[in-house]
Length: 226
Length: 59
Image (cartoon, rainbow over all chains, first blue to last red; front, side, top):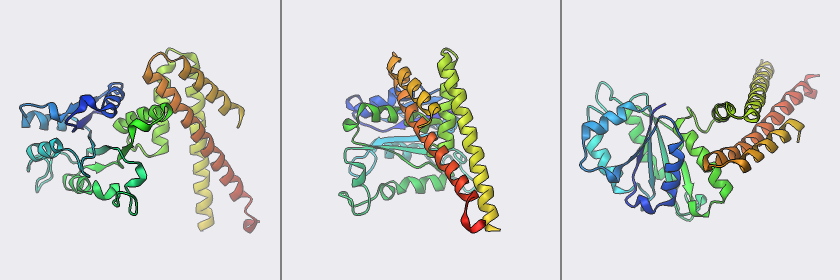
């Protein structure tokens, strides 16, 4: 899968979150890091070619006053033109997926109705939902990064792999897709490490067993409904 | 916890500790959570199958 990570951040060198994500993306085959604030001058045709070559687009940004920084809006206005992003006969983005990686300095529970910010993240991100609908993109549930600087080492390790999955896995929130990702990564490491290889085959057997149990449950439920 | 889960967790923990680069260490750390989650789901699914087979209303 080719993934274009469209990063909007005016001071990226000072952002530990973005530097961490960039290091994580570096380990993902087919992922391209595209920092909007560094583009000068903007070549619209080249930007559109990059977008067209991707299967998945990621909008990645910190939340500034409840929205993305200006560079994402400027880039969208210039690059996502009529005839390219949308048209009466369908635009050129149809069938791709769109992911959102959003970081902020408040705790996650701040962004919900009744929370300290008084508004949900789904509400704030709804313009991207509208954009995805109009352009025929399939929207993924966002990957939210709350208070990166407070994360423990273990939480950072989880974020590192969750982000890698988010860039490539068909449905990152689905356990079976996460399992497939872990098994593939483990099998790749197993080429040089016999323990990893044995672990990969054991986990694959367990995943098959889980699939088979789920199938049995589905059949039993169907039987009960009859 | 069953023996296989324990073995998988021990191996993942050892590989995380032995990893020289951050990407591998992060991977084997996250893998431990995956192993736990998979084991939990297996337990739950097995429990549901057993429960449905032994449903008193279906005797």
